Length: 341
Image 1 (cartoon, rainbow, N blue to C red):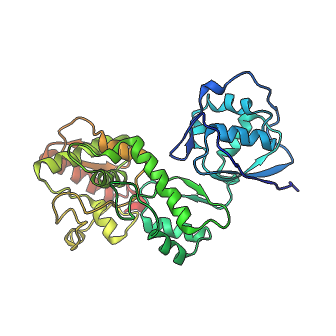
Image 2: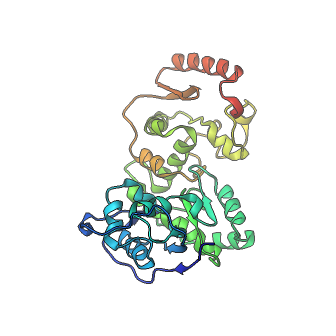
């Protein structure tokens, strides 16, 4: 049986910074260093990577715990592997006396993170709270914590401000602290993406709302184009008519088709009945959607439609859009969208 130890980092070293929950490593620390060669071992320890830990902190922590042979060994691997930016804060189970490469792989292995909470891009805050409740945080404490968190300047409400990522909270973590850590990661990403500063047309909150629609409406490769469609429609005074804003009202997941009756729902989030943006985000967007909200692609598109999975088309022509819509309806009836109908 593997022995269990527990290490906590007491002080931060200041060579590099944590961004969106991942770690960036400075090459100034890299030098030739001894390294273990083992891929695994029979001894395991539990190490907590604190929120806000720097790359230097993590390398020091692993070396002190005997996971890697030296501080420099881990740094040498980490600066050459972009995956090091994905190391999440929280408790990780790691083998002792292994190579730096193996240590990085284990840090990225979700199976080695106890009580892991995976927040997917676009999830509603209600869905996030449900996941946190399943991880051991009480619903009453979470409800109270929502009223105690500190929001970044320029943002309001509790939808859209919990950044999608992997989280692991140590036993005994207060609900308000768990929620605040997610908000703090959102604040970091909002600043990195630029939406926290707003732009000449939209406030930070409006950009977050746009990002949430982008996230819900399409795939990553289409985000910048969807962003342009939203801006173009707003500019010419067209209704957005986004199905996802109605799905948000209905709390409906996994449906491609939207009935005509649904488009008549009385809600300020119903972009079929109301002009302009909805009053707030319709989910919690990820980093790519935030960037796209601020940096739309160049184009005159007013319409887009996913004709079949993997085939999303953009046009400025109403006639072309209607032809594509007929093609979409045919594919829908034929079962091209599978269980998402």
